Amino acid sequence: MIDIELIRSEPERVREAMRAKGLLPGGDAQEDPVACARRLDKERREKITRLQEAQEERNDRSGKIGELMRAGEEEKAQEHIARTKELKQQIGSLEDEVDDADDTLQRLLLDIPNLPHPSVPVGASEDDNAVEEETGEKPNFAFDPRPHWALAERHDLVDFERGSKVTGAGFPFYTGRGARLQRALVQLFLDEAVEAGYREMQPPLFVNEDSARGTGQLPDKEDLMYEIGRDALFPIPTAEVPVTNFFRGDILAAGDLPVKRCAHTPCFRREAGSYGKDVRGLNRLHQFDKVELVWLTRPDESYRALEQLRTDAERPLDLLGLPYRRLLMCTGDMGFAQAKKYDLEVWSAGQERWLEVSSVSNFESFQARRAQIRYREEPEADPQLVHTLNGSALALPRVIAALLEHYQTEDGTVELPDVLSDYTGFERIG
Image 1 (cartoon, helix red, strand yellow):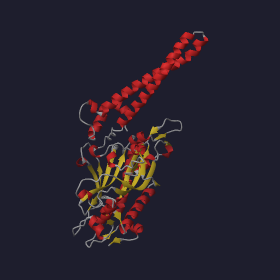
Image 2: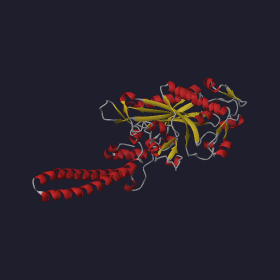
Image 3: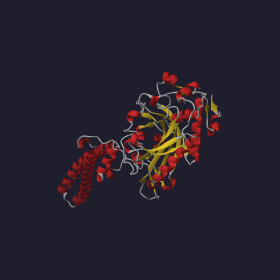
């Protein structure tokens, strides 16, 4: 959630940010969320002024009643008593109106996106993202490389058909060495995160509505989330949600910052992507495992933290020897809540395309304002909002896909990189 002061003082800047993200609806001023927010804010403040005036008058009259009674001016005292009773009813009504106005304004503010950082390129779609760097060499095979789903079937690593039978499309079984490979990668990723100073957490896999709203999944991504309606709970789309909300409502000491946490969880998402090659194999699933990194920082340190977080997310790819590239996402492809976002994409040799395995984002105070995560520079100082950041390090299915395709041999054997042998207990598949 952005600061209401921005809407009051710089409405056109907010509109421009919404246009840049492709989120400003057309039509007249009544459909403009910024104009609506300004109108509702003005009405709310007018109601607060009337409420305060009524409270002041009540307090003033209440204070005079005793004086008038002692002075023998009972008639005037009764007038004050009658007016005080009227004011009591008026104040009750005004308090209800202020509460309703607050709720209406807050709901509207939830639909206004975060403002992009000035360094973010303006663009409408993924075609406008900036490729900042490519790392590693793409393999040059002397044979036609197989896609990962063919290798997974050949070596009985992943069973898509039985996953569809048991649950539905997008819920595969990892079997045998496929399951061990995923477990090994999770352990490698967590070990690297802990070595880099992150404290490991094992969070709940379900969150309530307040938590989903706190990190910006609601209302923006409501259609992409599963929901357990009877219990008003949501299976998590990413560990970002429970780990960030662990601190919801907290006031931290400055000495506690930065906070660095990591967590491995399954993630659940309803989207299935477009039909065709994008959903083959492990490319896009409804349930997948991921290791997530989360930071809470002082505002003046968050962009240095973003670069460190990006480096931490890149390290597992370097260790695995997989070619990857870093993209700086444009305004139209960066998301509702992000102020700046990088994507890391790994090269899929069997499909000859890039696959996203990590998003690394700075939300500035957007999530912290929703979740009321604050800190104090000094024990008696006013609390300030932290900045929140998170990034995947990494999403497992596409890393597994890239590993199988990158390290395959002509006979279909997969020679794993040395860094994995201590974790898997085997050096090759096949």
